[in-house]
Image 1 (tube, rainbow, N blue to C red):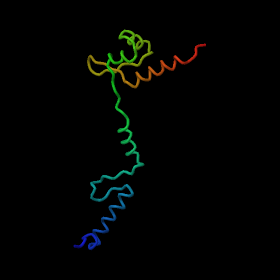
Image 2: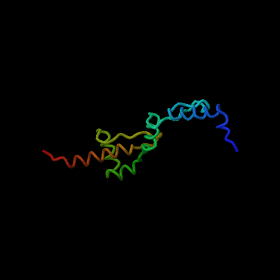
Image 3: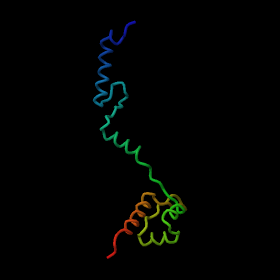
Length: 118
């Protein structure tokens, strides 16, 4: 049995060319224009961030009330004076709050508790 790649120098040269192009991050002629992005590329970092970053979670009113310990009327009063995160519209009659904003609001409340009053 013989190896056709070794016997045919053209095939061997093309194979080695494709390997060299992949090592450089360029696209091979038969790859359809797709390139293997090197790990340090912006494209790779963006994809990695999208995978590791959890999607934004939206909390509905009952869960917000349970988390912050306030009732509906108090939440809307705080929103009106600007001391609570604003709601976002989900539909005609549905609203929610971003979990990250609620968590940040709670964190600020806890930090304020530790600040000594003059």
